[in-house]
Image (cartoon, rainbow, N blue to C red):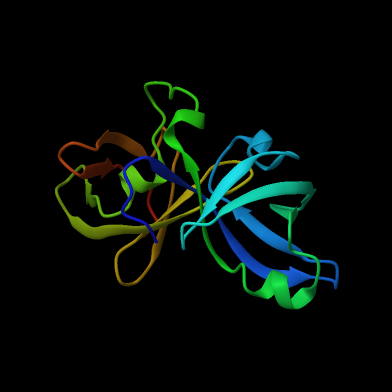
Length: 164
């Protein structure tokens, strides 16, 4: 991962697909244009990667980066993928970057502590917060997530019966 404040996490490069240098990318972004031909992303090791082509594959993308022409080259691309902060859109008041939520304490409206947000699982209908060591899955919907205070690093939820 990177500690550079000018970069935001955009996705995770997974395993290769086929023999032509394509890789699976799990996006951590709701901007599909992020993976369009010509887009420049930054690998966790600092290398700039230019998208040669991409297509949707269920909840992931199949991406071909310039210079990745074989399965072996694609294998070496595994890792986190970042985008410059100057290439991201403004967020609405009820939207949050995943990196702002990870590490936040999650508590219920009755004061029960559930643990920290460990990661975010992108979903078609809504994202899921993975919380605590038991990895409870909390849907990121207004009916459950009552408030988010990224400054105080706190998420308050009102879980329906049976969720936890």
